[in-house]
Picture 1 (cartoon, one colour):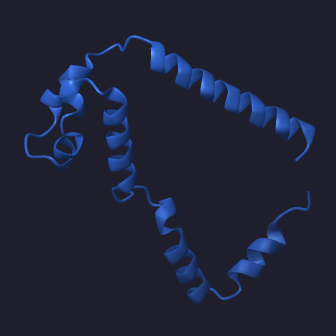
Picture 2 (cartoon, one colour):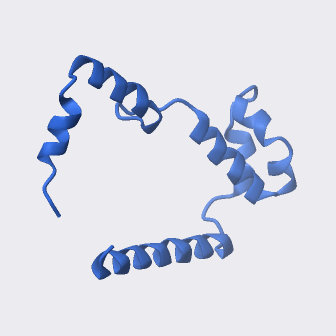
Length: 108
């Protein structure tokens, strides 16, 4: 890793962490307690949140929402969780694809 990349990565990490600190201490622009009223009454996410919303445990509620979103199936055509099956399919249909792709990568 050269100095330009290291500098970029450090700046990006510092910006991300500063944003997390800012969000943790900033007064939200919306009322978090409204979360319970906008979820489907019999929805999966509402049952997962349990009492964390009622108790005002927003860090737990955030973790539950993040975990819920991360666990659901991807909707984008290039979903990272489908990488392995896609690689296997391409390799089966186009046996020379890996070597061809490698030959196209410029030397750095």
